[in-house]
Length: 121
Image (cartoon, rainbow, N blue to C red; front, side, top):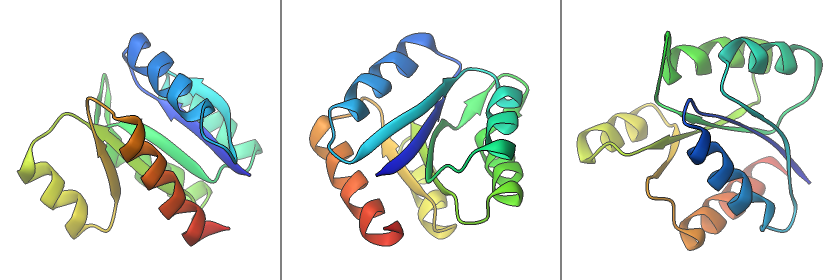
């Protein structure tokens, strides 16, 4: 069972991704956050397999937050949720980070989760 958290500053995006992830077998969403501090606090005390996060949030970039989370849990798998076009996608690939493009499609999300399961379980 993959334990996931979601962080995004947009409430509707959080709710939508939570809904989509909960439809996938073998996935348990352990928390949804709009505050990076609350996610960091949770990560310090609980094991997480995957974090889905927005690239841009008020006060911190997703890349900086990912760096902080990986210091706490080095095996954590980060997936950026972004509306950015090709140049941003190329940056993610170069840094070996996963991403999923908005608007999120159920088929793409299921495929990504299955790839992560193969890597982590």
